[in-house]
Image 1 (cartoon, helix red, strand yellow):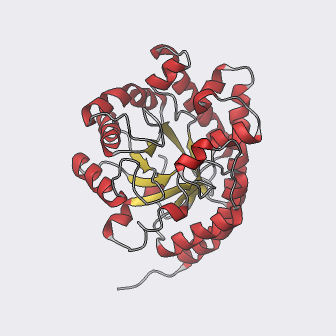
Image 2 (spheres, rainbow, N blue to C red):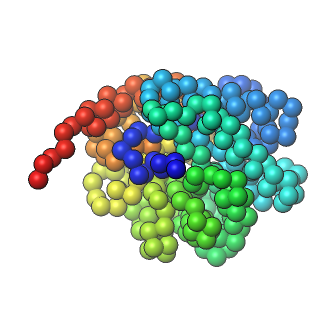
Length: 322
C-alpha cells in the first residue's frame, strides 16, 4: 500500500514546470500547453519519460519521496475537443499517461524513494482567470469522467492544480469522494495573495472544507511565486496546517506579465531554494516541494539542497517523553 505524502513526515519532491521546460528549453510545440498530446506523436512518450527521469534521478540521489504528477493538466473535455479528441480518445490518453507513470515507478521506487502516482486535473478554463465559472454541481459533473478514468487506471491520488475559484475546487473534491480517491486541491494566487476570483486563501480553504466535510487530503499552492503569497503566510494560523505543498513559479512576475512574455523568466534557482527553506522553517508541516512555470531540475535541486538539511534536523530531533 502506497503511503500518501500527507500521511508521512518524509519530504516529497515533484517535477518543475513541465510545459515551460518542454516549450522553452526543448523547443517542443505544445498547442494549448497540452503535454498529454505528446502521447499520440511519434517519440512523444519518450520525451515525457526522459523529462520525468531527470527528476526521479534527483529524488533517488537525495533519498526523498517523489510524486509523479500525470501530464494531463489539459486532458479535460474542453481542451481535448480543441485538440481534436473525442471522449473515447481522451479517456485513452488519460489511461496511457497513468500507465507511463506506473512503468517509471517500477523502475525507480525503493525504500528510500517512495513514489506516489497522482492523476492531474487542470481547470476547465484559463489557469490564470476565473472569468468563466461553473457551479459546484456543474464542476462535479464536468470533471467526473476524468476522475473515473483515473480511478480505473489505478492512481494513488488525484490533484487539481491551478484552481482559480472555489466552486470548481468543490466540484472536483466531490467527484473524487464519489469514486473513493484522495484528492489534493492546489490554488493559484495573484500578487496580492488572493485567488484570481478575489477570494483569500484562508476563505477558499474554509469554503471547500465546509462544503465537502474537509474532503481534500491537503491543499497546495502552485503557479505563483513565494513573494505572491508571503502576505497570507505572515501569521501562523490554524488554517495554514491544511497547506502541505508548494509548487512555485520561478518568476516573480504577475500572471498578466507572464501571459505577455515571449521569453522564459527562469528566476534564480538558489534564491528560490532559500525562499522554500525559510517557508519550511516557519511551517515544517509543508513537506511536498516542487515547481511550476519556469522551473526545471536546477530549481528542484536547489530546493533539495536548501531544505534537506532542515528536514533531516527536524526528523532527528528526539521525541518528547511526557
